[in-house]
Image (tube, rainbow, N blue to C red; front, side):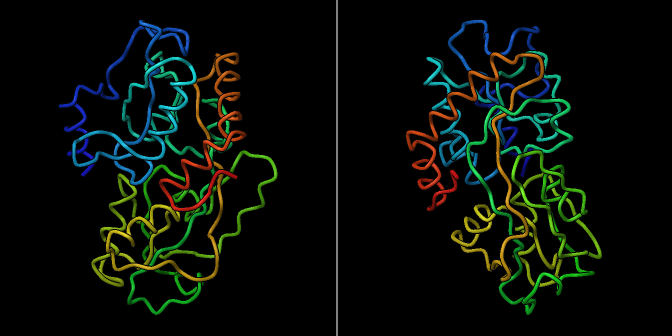
Length: 273
């Protein structure tokens, strides 16, 4: 699925992750009219290709609003998530708007330019699952998107680098962790039946609710959230003034209700605080 989406993006003229531009100061595009944005390519409803092969979603709307407030036009690129969060962009992107969690490891290579919403993570199981508690999934097969906080959580290594965040409580010790290239693929396996390929999936509540709305025979495990994480806009290291400028825009979007409006539009509820 990810390869198919990448092909469509290339057909649309969106530059792939391997395309390098000359090194430049972040925020300074060759025309000074474009804002080069790294994002996800297949993560509904954050960012995905619609029926017209156009990138749409919550993250896309946020990025376009940031660009508008800068007097720019957003131009999107869809690298692998690990590339987007790995820093050393060499001028390929000005910002990343890809629902990135500010972890301690990522803080070593990128800067966090402002939390723009919060995402609760849940455990999803098949509709036929008899599991009623997190602990009932101990020893089971759990699917996650690779390179994400879902994987860090299920492997008991999640460290969120944000103030006032409670300690993570690991309530599931899986027998096997299966990783996938994007957030939809583990849910596709889960929908095949309870225990057929997976017993559970760790994913953002928004993603799971979107799958349920699309008819997936899955449900959210009772017992509350696995964890709740802040999501931040990302800039590359080495441009503190640029990072501060983006942070001020995010703060203004939160203060004037823009982020509340956009989260409600795409998720049906306010995740902006």
